[in-house]
Length: 452
Image (tube, rainbow, N blue to C red; front, side, top):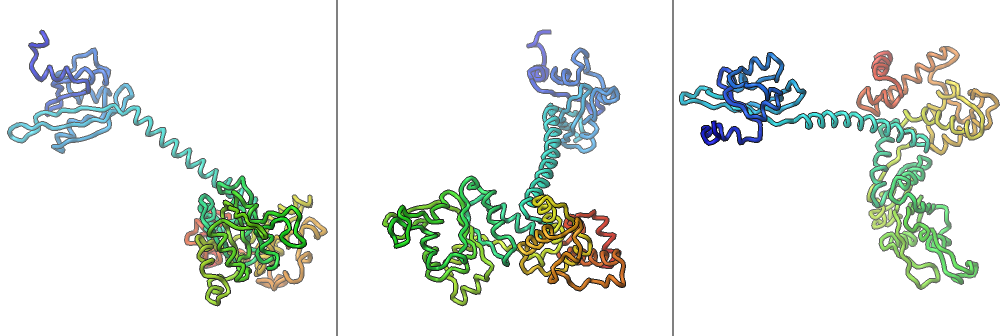
């Protein structure tokens, strides 16, 4: 039969480049395109007149869309698998007769095999990325620990998280917290995590430089600026911070006259050396720190309000050690290992010493803890550091009387106190477990044991 003799529907069907299959409401195939036959691997068979139900039984393709369209009486989409391992997105469309009955079902498909492979690949990659993410988190925590940041407590994790976020941008940061909590350490971490990490980190202790010398140290001076001046002049600390980070520690100790000059410098990033006439410009990222309540100082007119707002763009509060008691024992263990390695002396603390140190208020915070651990490692005569090695000020009344209780009972009480504190800091047993370094079922069991 010549092509022009074929009826119109046949011509259209042959012209189609896509897959198309038409059945009656019994599932008998009435028309099919060559593409369809190729997809199902039946191009060498005349499948018109055969049933899609039989093809499903033979495993040529599954599931079939015909009964679904008849049942729903509307367009239906299914994912079909062929005997060639292809994945097809099948769309079945009902054709109704004059009485409103489903008369024909036309279905067409899109080969989504590669898309399905890509989906599986992306799922695998997502799992791999999650694994890598977890490994990076472990490495990050290891790095933080190696730098002295033990962040098991919720408060410390939040503090470090904010610091890492702001490190990426040149926003002014104000570090707040008691003396010894690690403000300088955190400032250095922000610098190391910033795009300026390869440039200088210049620390200026505003409380340690005498007021009469501050300007010459901070801004520098030209040759012959004053009697004892260097004959060649000297660049100031501000100038040395070019391209890097300028850290103004103890900013709350600055006198009001110096605050005016520092504010002008921060705003304009320009200055004159003492005795100089050349205006100098410096590019720096500013971090300030204080252990004083600047808001109260502002109210008392001891600190300029405009300087306070200039510094306090992103405040980060570093909690005192007594506010994050779950970090005390991990910190102790960390610094015992650190100083043991540094001085080539293997030392460990016995449980009674750990109990005493856990009870200590740590008014000097991390600085006090570091100094004590270094002292103990250096001065202890034996491998095991005992109560006798502790300075008298660190020997506290035990939680329970060891003369009346066993060591296990003493340590149980320490464990109970730690669990109580952790429960105050964290909302879930999973978080408590992570902070204390034990399993979640253990936390549940211990909370029940101590009736917490």
